[in-house]
Length: 299
Image 1: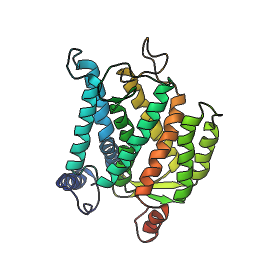
Image 2: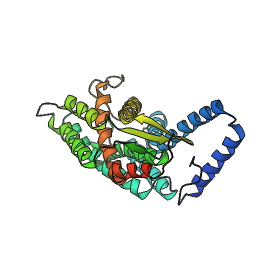
Image 3: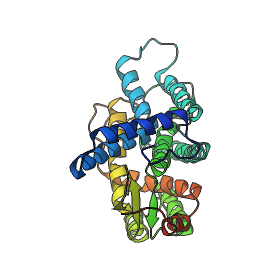
Image 4: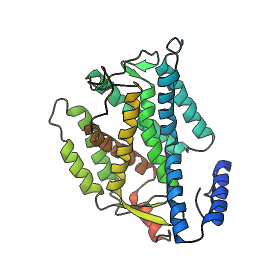
């Protein structure tokens, strides 16, 4: 969608969106100012489209917090599990999500659930409500919250047609992602190397530039800046999650307050893991660079 031609194997919905974009562009774009406004709006629409899974999950959290009956036979947490499954199946059935993207989401779902089991066992946060669909102290809907991050990164990569300059070798990214994941567990017994990991992400990804296409032209952005912005919005989403009492950190059990900014760094690092998984699906950075050098249009 939002391209000169619809992408190959487009769904009917994608073709309709493409046609709607073309009609709006022809009607309203008359010069560079209107083109800039049109591109800004297109950027926002694409971002919202990429966030569809996460946005629907946050909507479920808010709706069940406000209106879910306490006397219901099905617990709120179990309802969230079923709702998340319906959303996931619907996105696959309609073609909004590809099976390749679903594989990334499944892996990140498992990665997140394993970390949830460990962190809740060590009291990092709690799930205050009862449920049937859970493993130990972790309701199964939590894996879908991690999957929402994977879903966003997989979809935004496709929707904005990412291309990269100086993309790091995948083996280096995989080693960094592994170190990040291990540190989430090991810092309970060993020194926390989080600062070193932040520095490593700057070294590995600092030279990299991502080119994204909101409308007609590709635009550049330092990849690290993109990481920070995504982590910031995940932190905002986590504040919504804790406000709805879906989970709670120590100190939030007596009353809600904003999540510590230190969690922003944790989400930044965890998001790197998801990015590497998506990068593996898209093969290698060299493939993206080859596509650029072989004729991908750039300003």
